[in-house]
Image (tube, helix red, strand yellow):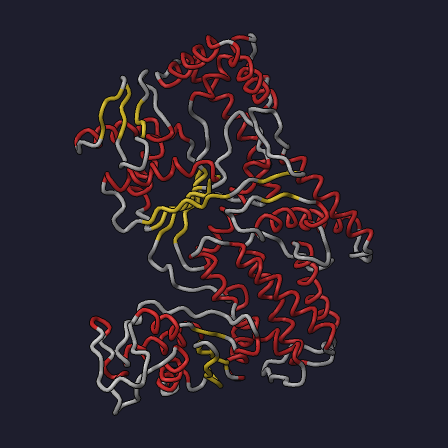
Length: 594
């Protein structure tokens, strides 16, 4: 709320001086003493608008499109020699804004030309009132009102174990989904299962080769068949040919092939749903690649009608520009590709939900593929009013090693999650945390802490980075970890429950401690961080904010008496609510006790 009001005031000020105010950024200063918000607009305008740099000039200069004659006329304010001088001019104009009369106590200029804003005590107090009044709705906005976004995430492969290789897509994707819901978007989560393609030809060929009943197999058995068959095919090309034959049967609707494939789907989905239950993941739609089987012909037809496809060595391909390899719509044997299936998926999503944004949370190894798909969608004319975004996550390394299904080096996700819960219980016991809680409740808390630790360890990193999972870091009780944030939330609840007083309904600001002031000012920025994390597809920004907030609260807790002070209880209550809201967005539960 405050960020928008200040941004609007800055925009009006620079426009009144003749500048183009299209690009105005407002950020939280790195140094707390510089206030609550800061803008570098003067630095940008001085650099891009061609302002005269010497007072020795005797006449105004026409600088073209910027048209800032009101600024440079000597009889008005004189020539501007530096960004700081321009900042002073803008600052004086902003101070005239009625919008900021009650919410900003100070507007000041700092080297080399920043304009800093300090919120008033009343504005800070209003934030506390809003948090305690709105509770779980604090931080929500109407930015996405009337808009729909679709996010494609998780997407495990049928007939393969749900390994930690799919963990990043699932966790990051759910956090992005939650962020956009918080901003008021109509969000649609779509689990685009990998249930089609040549790999299924390999599995079906392996079942035939080993004379197996697929209904008696587990996901582990199916994955081992795939791994072993892939290895054998390297030395025997005929095995790959047999796999292609089986996939062609599958696409042609062969009854035997379809029944075997459906059994593999059913076996796999049973395991996936168990994993989602452990992770507390709920995805709106589950459409596998096979769902688009009858929707690809219309895309191929449209490509031909628009002259976008051509034949190449028996295959149907689509040219995408000089700097990009062509996309293959159909292979020479008539079977389909990932490329055509993803195009059919975009068309279906547009026709069904009419989104203005489609996000693909998929590994970075698919970067070229999505560049091709997005370029093709643009050539089809589907992207008017539509943004297509690939959030390309890096690798999830476990003990420094990359995992590979083909190489047989995956880590079973269910085992990782179980181990996390067990380790969380051990950490809690060793630290004598929750020592007054019975064993059943400890088990429940251990589960929430263990799962939360894995989620937070991922989400505190930028999606694009590779991460190396380290147990000690993930489960640390005093570092940047999920358990630390959960423990801080539980501490706020403990303080409130043990106090004989209630939080004040008429909060009054203490001015005696720096710790209290820092915590209060941190709470103001929660809505800004949520919006920025969503629009930049970076849940790590929210994770980093929550960690800093937890640090501020623990410093406040150590420095101030809280239990007998109604106003400080209000601040504690508000902090707990914001921690809970933020962790909820990240998909992490908040135990009341720890």
